[in-house]
Image 1 (cartoon, one colour):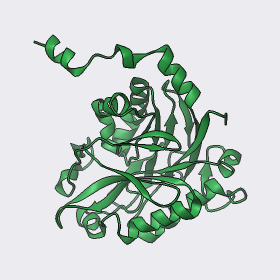
Image 2 (cartoon, helix red, strand yellow):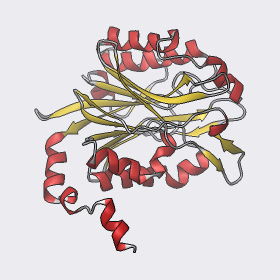
Image 3 (spheres, rainbow, N blue to C red):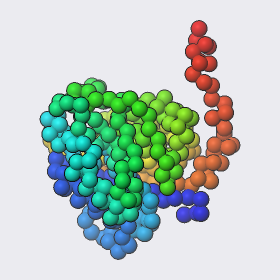
Image 4 (cartoon, one colour):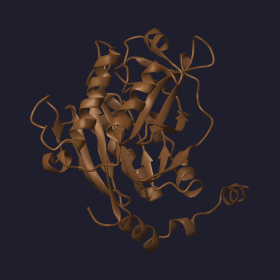
Length: 302
């Protein structure tokens, strides 16, 4: 780690319909990042054991649905809570007690009525305070080949605001899962909101993950010249749902700088966010100066 860099960690896990179990897994992963002598049990895997054990990471990123994965829509609605409820407050306590920032993507926040919730990405600082929240804009209403149909909008209200937040790790652009297919959101985060690091917590299906996950993440990193941290759910959550895994950290040149060797394992991968590299890439290929405004393209199409 150089003087102009900061270390981050991205988690991979298999959440289930047990709030306490998932919290224990998240707590264990955070402690493994912080603790020097405890990476030889619990079945947790690191991309670089020595590095992860003494990581000094300032931020740990968890995947979408970190707190709960149910088999049915009513399960998600049943556990949905406001951000000041006991579920999120437990994660605030984890951040405070560990003195580390947490990215918690895909929290089931109580919505405007009993039949709807928000899919909310929450960033907590090292004092346990909620610093920022982003409600997922693009909802997953699709038919997957060979699988069931998904209609997230049946129980989830889409967000309307683009969100970036300052942190000790740099300026973070907040997104969730299916958002990754919509490059205009990431263009806005980079060029209008000055993001340096794009967070993409996800629970991609196996079919779409194997086909598109890595390609989409690398494309967003290259287009925006940002780091991308993509924490992923993996494995069988229940008889109805399986996630692809493949937790990745990608640099602004589109190079994968960290990944778990086992796509299906629970574990942590770490990387250094190198601001010298980020500035060099943006200086040598100044796409922000060459980029045309939206009204240019509107007039060009007339």
